Image 1: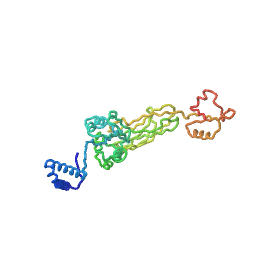
Image 2: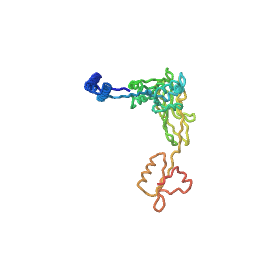
Image 3: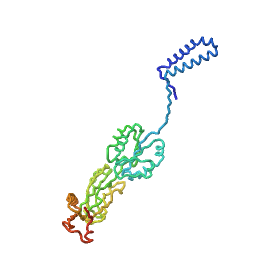
Image 4: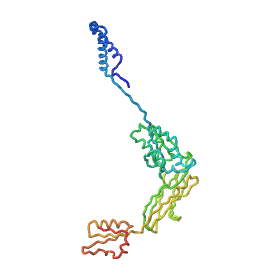
Length: 366
């Protein structure tokens, strides 16, 4: 705690104090002779004390109390959980290396000394608490390091951050160049490298997209995404199979830059039921793993057309619209019946047997 006087110079206060003391003594000389020296000097001292106190008040003293405390510095921890972090290269398993770092003494020391705000990222970013590190999920997607750093830049209190710790294998497949984003960030970015620094050679099927339900004798498209890292200008087949039999094959020339390349395969199922398919690409020499070179999936195949019976209680404005909407779908076989006032139906009669009723997949009552 400190006392500050709101004045331009302490010299003036000192001079004023001496002047006050001198003036009080001069006017009090007669008082001292009248009441005696002891009582007189006591009264003089009381007058001087009161005058000095008034002088201090007139100088507007300010009492300032300063309290200080030390807050831990803020750090943002960005953890790469993309598909490439699951690879096994010359240095071993990347996921095991990541798990060991997060469970090690270095990370524990960071948690104690700093206020860590942790985020997982692949192509998307989400926050996580430290207690969830035991079940750290890896995402089957690309790596957008630039977007993760961009998120840090858009924080409300960027000036309160001491730095960013980035745990990644450095293999970004989408988005901006992370070096440029880090340069724009203007705060330190500390990188923890995971994986072999000599690079990775790998090809794999990263994703596929198709319908879960199809119909007999209908052509079903299947979009397959292929990624390659370190293997470029190689033409490889992407093959669709069912039960070991080749259904369709398309070729793609690998770029080797870790970016997705898409091809579209087709299948025409001839029977209904659940069909199991697989897509694969051949394993190239030097690949770190072959587990991602094949992907399996299933499609539920229904009969050629669903039989629908649409029964309407009488003519109404929505009848034609609903009927045309149903008939527009080539996978539907639509029959319609309209009741007349006398109870008969038009243009056909109602099904007369249980088997006829159950021959329809769906009955709509209007």
